[in-house]
Length: 263
Image (tube, rainbow, N blue to C red; front, side, top):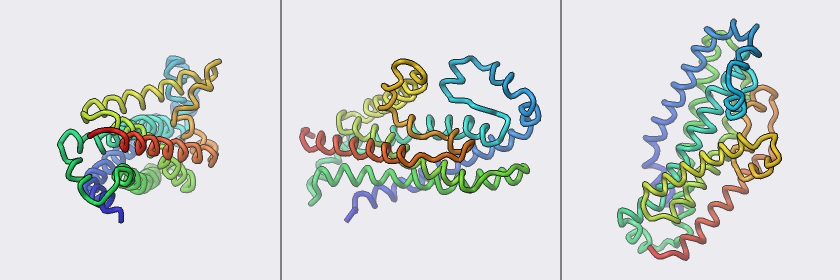
């Protein structure tokens, strides 16, 4: 059982460790530079935010820079997790099936006693390796770095912001998976996945508080809010359910599409 997932997961382990190191370094740098800005933020936070264009404030949902939580929400979690990691998982997902088709490996794989649906599902499950590894290693670095610079963070909030990012990242990977079964060429599938994921981020960010805000409901980014978690200790498990539902739908559509197409 799950031989494909285990094989692909082992192959992704080294890259996942490198990813965790990179994101941990980003977290450490963000926290290290915070004290040099914190004193000025204490008194002029509102004026500082006004220096940003309104479009930037809305795009990145910047709420405050006067606390380490607000600084992390913007610099690390909205930029690093919501955008960078979301795009990266969509990119990885886009290579799961398309790469095997392009390189001619899919015929060998499907000649084994495995169904097409099992192949798609197990290759998707292997993406749990980078998602879990980066969300296990980085929070330890975040908490330890905050202690080193004399700042305190809620352990519960740090665990929550990483745990709740897992269904979000799976949803982004699901976008890539769908692109991977629709398009034969890996590079094209990856471009589609990146474009759709970033386009959904822009859609959700720019339609907030407009008459068309409801359209943004299709974007996974609507259901992962680092600001609410870190600044208000607010966790909406309903949003987690929506993200899980999105992921299951994307995987199901990918399975149906792959079963019906020629390879």
